[in-house]
Structures are given as structure tokens and as C-alpha cells.
Length: 407
Image 1 (tube, one colour):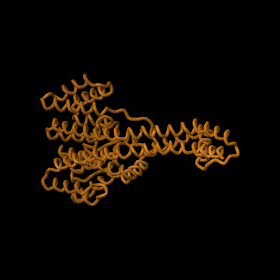
Image 2 (cartoon, one colour; image 1 turned 120 degrees about the vertical axis):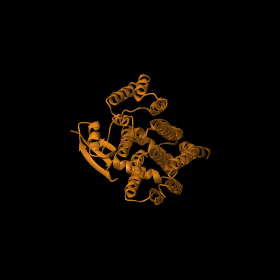
Image 3 (cartoon, rainbow, N blue to C red; image 1 turned 180 degrees about the vertical axis):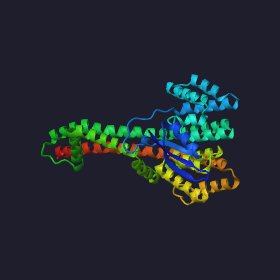
Image 4 (spheres, one colour; image 1 turned 90 degrees about the vertical axis):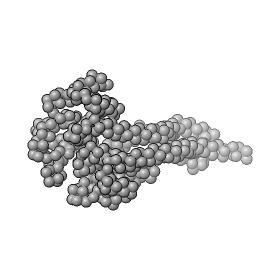
């Protein structure tokens, strides 16, 4: 029987972490609830990946999920029953996979299950944030408003991802072109030029150091290309797989945070995700400890995840979140702690943090534009330098031969 690891809050507001054996995820959820615990998260133990993984989980596209959320919000606010709204969206789903998911949710809701619990059975499509916020919306009778918040949050996250990918596309294309041009020159052009120079100057002629270096690199690539390509591909594959392991991801995230140029953008993106996700959960009525736990896993950076989980433990011990955040200025700029403190004093944490999220999302846009304007000329100079080296290695011996002929 599968074993499920869960995190929950008991009647004393204490966080409980344990395991339970059940036939499936839904049964495990019901067992936890019968113990009088308020569930925060639950996952199957043997579904964890501690090493290299192959393939990718099949989930719903962000655009399709946003559309689903907005349509469901509109129908619920218009007074359309949940089952009728879900049935309508199942008929108009863009993909067969998501249609099957919605139909499965319909069957569970028809059987008396809460919408949040039905969504929780499909973690590939609906993450913990989504499920927790829907559960809070159902409990507070504000499901339509919660769904609007969810749709807005998903659109913001998708917008940041698109901007980062868009900013990196051109530099990556230049890198690929540069590498391709280098190998093309070394394998096809330099050997021909080298033979021509030797024919003109003779095998005993002393060539310039730069020309000798280029001919040596070219000869090595031509002789061992069948080994170099698999080795480079293997190194890239191994590095990418290692980054996907828990230990590798942790080291890579630490590197990204401290990396020049990129580090500032990574920190701003993480802060924007933290403030927007946390504000959405708090605004939905989710308890602070639950909101911190869910937010920690949603930020997408293990360094911030550990920081927020540590903060949750200290909050549970009676400390104030804004003071805890203020202690780590490397991860959280002072404005985050200050605005959070204002929110705690006024009881409007969700509204205050939304403004912080908006500010840092604008900062991310500015930083991305700035780094793009720096990377492009650097890459062009690099390409020009590479071509210049090749040209110099060719022209130097030819110039030497011309001088010898004149003398």
C-alpha cells in the first residue's frame, strides 16, 4: 500500500509532519482529516525523485488554466452552479487531456466531494496554491473572487517567465552561432589555409605562435571530433540532470543568487513571486503558517524555500514575520520587511504585498531590458574577436612570406 507524507496543523496551531498509508491520495486526505488535522500538503513518498529523472509530467498549459479559471470565476459569480459550469468548460476544453481532467473532477463533485479536494487529485494540473486558495474560497463563500485572484496571479507568473525567456533568446542564438562558426572555421577553413601556407613557405618554415596554436586546435578537432562531440554532449546532459537533483538544484540556486548581473534578476523574481503568492493566500483567508508553507514551495528557488520554511517555524514560536524577514537583507530588500510590517499593523497584508509584487515585477522588466542591452554587444564583440583571431592567424604568416619575397 502506498505511503503518503503530509504536513498539517493540529488544534493547538502546531505544525505536524507525518506519514499515512492509504490506497490512494484521496483516502490519505480523508484519513488525515478524520484525525482532526487541517491539511497543508500531502504527497506520495515513492513519487519523490532523489536522482536522475527521465521525461516530463503531463500537465495543463498555463494559458488554458488561466482561461479555465477566469471562465469558472465568471460563471460562479453569475450564479451558475459549479457542476453546470464545469460541464460547459469540459465541452469546450482545448485539449483532450484537460477535458478528461475536468470530467474526472465533475464525477468527484457529483459524488459529494468538495471542489478543492477534487482539484487536489490532479496535482499535475492544479498545484498546492490553487487547491489551498479554492478551499479557502469555498469555506468563506468567496470562490468567484478567489478564482479571479488565481487567474491574475497565473497571468503575472506567466508574464515574468515569457519576458525572461524572450530576453535570453537572442543571446542564446548568438552563442549557438558563435560556437557553430568556431567549429566550422576550425574544421573546414583553417586546415585548408594551413596546407596552403605550408605549401608556400615549406614544411620547415617557422610560423607565428598564434598560427601554430590555431593549427594545433584545428588538427585536434579534425582528428578527434568523434570523441569531442559525445564528451561535450555528455557533460551538458550530466550537468542538466545534476541540477534537477535536490542537492544539485540547491547549489545551482545559490550560485544564481550570487551570480553577477543575473543574481539581481533572480532575487527580484523570487521576491515578486513570494509577495504575490503570499498576499493571494492571505487574502483568501489561508492561515499564515499554511500560506508560508505553500509559498515556500511556489517561489521556485530552494534558498528562498528554506528561508520561508525557517520563518514559518519561528512564526509558530511567536515571532513576527516582518522582523524575521528584515534579518536577511541578502534575500529580502528592506522595503519588503517595511511593507510587511505596515500590513501586519493595519491588517491589510494582502493589499500591501500586492503593491510590493507589482513594484518588483516592474523592476524585473527594467532589469531584463538592461541585461539584454549589455549581453548583446558583449556577444557581438566576442564573435568579432574570434573571427579576428582566425584572420590574424592567417594574415601573419602570409605577411611574413610577402616580406621574405620582397627581400
